[in-house]
Image 1 (cartoon, rainbow, N blue to C red):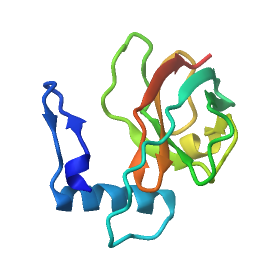
Image 2 (image 1 turned 30 degrees about the vertical axis):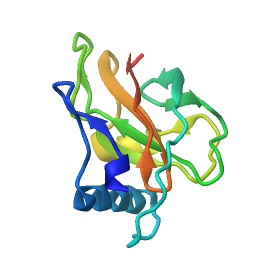
Image 3 (image 1 turned 180 degrees about the horizontal axis):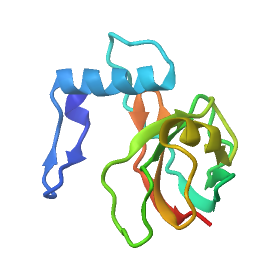
Length: 151
């Protein structure tokens, strides 16, 4: 399985992970999704890419619409967010996994309660960065990203 995977690093060079690295990647994703650890290499799956739609971000609501909706059977949406930043910040590299949707969930992701529990109530005028990835069988799609200022 590992030899059929290919990634691009920060400098633009392509590489294939070792078998151990592929094993850890797939099982970390499975555990995050609430699935069991696998010992045998799964078939390589390319999850459907998501596109971010409307972002609703206020001091009392936080939801993100996405397409494809609903997700395919067995697929989940991994929702990553940043802490609150100044509205003038235009790039954020420190995003944390906030929540994972149920299988075949429909848009939008409602993240207000989870965000408040982890980072506090969104403050008007601050920016929050968002990334969505689709999970399927231990693999994640490319990230769909965006940001919004709390209104």
